Length: 336
Image (cartoon, rainbow, N blue to C red; front, side, top):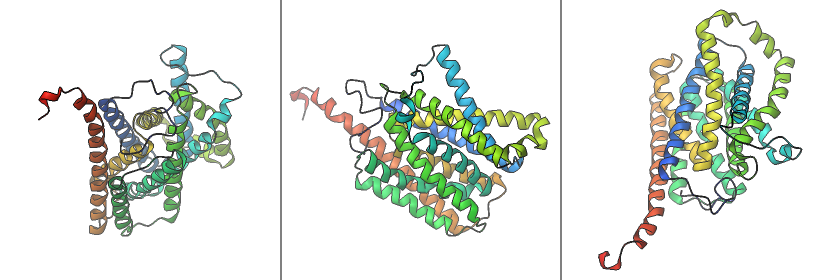
């Protein structure tokens, strides 16, 4: 990676452990991008096409799916994470608060903005992640990486400046989502020490601690009542997509933790940005809520260019980091 040594997270706590291969890093990034891409499309259909009135209840469903899948997997010895003790809440803090904030703000912003504008404004997660990794994890980034990030932000500013369907509430939710996502990614990377909770423990206890408070919020705001009175519960296709969203919510959290563990929180954010531009292109053709503007279209393409440059720099730096080791194994008489 172009980033400096990790000050925390899964890569720093076990020096003797084998580092993930370049293929594992690439596959983890692709896995995260694919899960995130599919979840945005499914959530958009549920909240906009079907008009499901409760993004909080949808988030509760995703938390419940995470708890059930991980607990059953632990019982069947497929995965392992520590049993509960009194120190776990201290070890996790502030992840549970960031977790639920990320869930609710993300689902709320998805329902209030067009797909292209949602994906554009989500780009601001990247500089926030870069800043937090520098402050919290003590990482350093090359000037090329910083320029790539600024290119993504420039494209976002250009595209957002021509938004013809401005929604203040949607903008507030998406910027809150950016803050929660960046902080959640960095703190998750810091706390995924396999000697402590590990990635499965972090995901499981996050969901356990926040599902009841989120349910209370849903009841007190009338959100749960709106969800139970929703008219589409007899629609088989709606139920299938609701369950699919819950399952994809688990996969998204797992793939994001995996990508941050194998790469970094910043790489996870950039992969999300590349995915978001892809979603924006689809939204232009099939979303039905995109108002075309040439300036907006140019901004989207600038975002994609910056994201692809970041990916190229990251992959090339990984290859270069292996090169000195290979050269040491070359006999002197063959070096000419």
